[in-house]
Length: 462
Image (cartoon, rainbow, N blue to C red):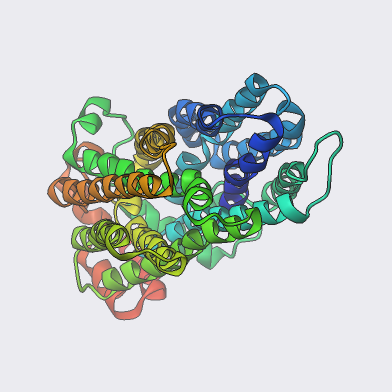
């Protein structure tokens, strides 16, 4: 349900990237106006990260996550009417951003109660892979609906069907979410006793080390937190730039039709979805087999997901001239960056599980700045009126800048990151630490997996 929820939320935020190509023609908007409209979502999205992260921790993620998608879905249904007045459309997009601002923090807040430590990478990867899947399908479906969807008088074209279809999908998901999802294993009426006790015991041992106070100053001066924040900025720059301006790049340089544009723009995110899931399984396998420590595992996945995309973007600028080569390079960039989700993205739950929702909110606020700044920077760098060749050179500069930002994120994470529970998030009583995580539990975990971990925990408590 988290996976599908992120698909729905990114349907609602990403559909405008393709539809706006047709909307510009109908309403006569220039590039500056369309850039302002595309960026409006992120102004609202940035504001509610911290408040909704706190609300999710206090009142439960079910209401925050589901309520945000419900509100954004309803606003999607009125977007075709709001488009007649660009100021109202901008306001609608800002409010959609406000509504969906709590999705990522509330997901981390709920996984704090549901994800056992040795299954954390793949569970978080599966749920957040919905972001990539939503973006991947939003673009081709938007292009298809713009070309072959239904008309909505008095509009001249079929782009309104994009907002009606995706808004309807969000409403259907909301019905299922509120019927099926519960905030914790203890509150779930259908869960088996064995599974509930396994999840609760595995998480309680880790969280028994954690303090409940919010040491804000120590959080904001922690190198491990800044490693996550700086990497999130780099990751979001690349991801959100691809999601927001990719259709414009395809329209400017490759000159595809609207349907082909949507398919081309969506394929990199489909590749990213697959590699995000793959990275989760790889990271958990490395940790379960004790091939690397948690910190080394996060560094490995994050380095692959930051440095290799930077290298591929440089190759794109040097050698990619045909549409097929450009597509391969962009898909490779997106796919490899998806591996970093099992690095910095999951790392919040390693260093401070009690505050994972709060850390997600802080990092996402910083990353969202990329969604605001990126389209402006790309638009300013690639707006030449003097011909296709000059425009290609300017787009090359956009990709070079993105490669440098990816590399910066990879270096910052290597220098500052940690895979251990931080001192400001842990109780300092050594006796409590030893009792909460005895060596026998680690041994049983290595030998026989979930069931032995569960049995060892019960034996220890007895």
